[in-house]
Amino acid sequence: MDNSFQSYLTKEAAKILLTGQSLVVGGCNPAHRGAATANCFHLSNSLNIAGFAQTIGVFSIHCHGNLYINAQLALFSIFLVLSSRRGSLSKLVSPYQELKRRMDYFLSDKFKARAEALIAKYKVPGLAVAITHDERIESRAFGLARLDPPVPCTPDTLFDIASASKSMTAASVALLVEDERYPEVKYDAVMSEMLPGDFVMPTEELTQQVTVDDMLSHRTGMPTHDWSYLGPVSKTPDTAQSVTRNLRNLPVCAPLRTKYMYNNMMYTASAYLVEKKSGLSFSDFLETNFFKPLDMTSSSLQPSRARAKGFGDRLAEGYTWVGKESRQAPVPMVECPEADGAGSIITSVNDYIKWVRAMVHKQGPVTDAVYNGLLKGRTLTNPRGEDLPPHSSPGIYCAGLESDYYRGQQRVEHGGGVPGFGTEQLFLPAQKFGLVIATNSGDGGHAASMIMFRELMDEVLQVPVEERPDWEDLRDKREAEDEDEDDPDKCEAEIRQDILESLEGKEGGGDAEENDAKVEKKDREPQPLTTPLAAYAGTYEHRGYHQLVLEIKDGKLFVDAEERSFGFTGVFNHVAEQTLFTLRIAESKEWGGQDKTAIKAEFKLDEDGKVTQLGVMLEPDMEETTGEMIWFTKK
Image (tube, rainbow, N blue to C red; front, side, top):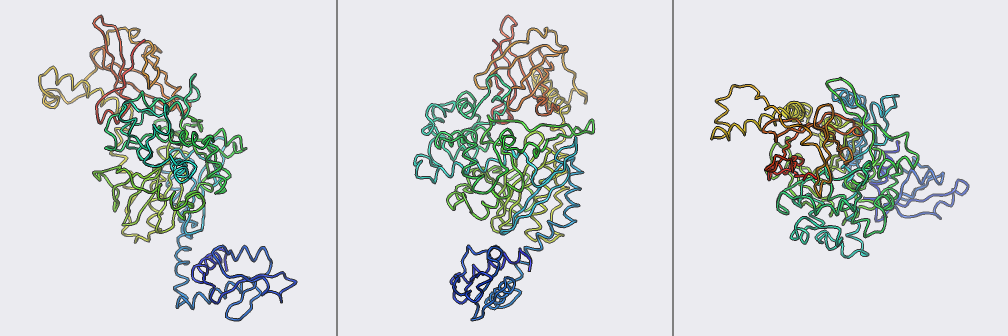
């Protein structure tokens, strides 16, 4: 009788015979077998037969007047009693067989082959995955944690799980909400009243209205502004407090509670709230309330803490696939204390699945109240239901988790990604199933993880094979549709043409589409730059975005913004009218230095032709809603 079946029988016995009507379990020392009845107790939820037998050495059971002095025999007796009460053996065994079937697939060579095919196709060096189903946990890993020298990826390899960390931030707030020591902390409490002087929005009205619920569900009206905060390499690095205090200097672009706009800073402000109320650093709060109670001994906030614990040799290295050069570019695991609460939990799938299991079963720190707070639906992420996956509902952002329905079954998930790393966590409440997938690849890791978790979901839900969507094909088609947006050259060319077309529309007295018919179907050439580059060079300031220093480098107008949390460098390329430019952006060397994208930029000149301002389209949500740039003033 294998251990998993022992565990299953024990749990079923506890469910059915909790009243202790006729089943009494007891143990005795081998030298005192005749005294078995002296140490009897009624079956309860806490009984673990396998562990009990191992500890005592002899196991006895009174069942219908019979005494059994053998662990295996005792378990078999429970099996017979339960079978008789269920009416047949099949009714008892079939749920166990179904659980075993699903786990058998996960542990099979077939699943191994599928995982290896995915990481090969999407250029993912390493992938680790753990699943929990009912009370059972299994994990596997494929590929390499580091390429040079080669280090195998294992279920204990440590990854940066990025925004998948947000569920623990939301749960940290939930613990405060349920703690009588902090009566002022409620989901509907106004943030500025709990953090007076620190939490100030750009308008007084918003300052007096934004609540904890608004922050946790990305509905404050403030876009990401991810390029606004400064990392550890800066002379003035940001902290959770300074990020919170800087909110007053950043523009909003939608009314409160009208639009879902993902915002990392609000989760950093949530972590700061936890620190202020608890008196603990956010790292220590996680250790005390989650990592230690759940036996997540390998988990930490920030890679420096993982190294301090002696886990440096278990840290994965991140990678970005450089298609033009057919190579993996290494991306180190970066310290981001300015993003505490938004990400930067360093963990393994063997550790993190314990948190997923706690949510699935409402165990440990996840009480009913905490669970309900996490899963309360707050904001529609896709209110029009556009481009939904097959058989799926629009998603609802809850608190650090997103919920939707797939084939009528609730699905709760949250991904995470930073350059070099991609993570996915998921659970199906009704099926008591959960998983976590961690990879040391950004884009490729997201692709492989998405396909894997959806295929496992179909397996758990027992969707007939012929009815399962081809998730790989669907992902590849979506990627092909977005190819132009993801290609920096094509992105820059499109921006350049948009600028030139808009100017032709103005000059022609009509709109760009009408005038387009008069222009040959070829790329319009940018106008020549006649203003010296030195006229644009200098220091530009914005209260929320700090400084940008433009200089001439290799004959180009260059900006180095590597001190930012999401650091970048950029080259300004002139398009028209001596004021309209593209800004070609590459990730910072710390993030791998890869060519990333292109955005619009514009300079303003005074009456004397002197450059006075620089506008940069740093916020996609602002471009979509207000069309506004972030404007810097030249010193």
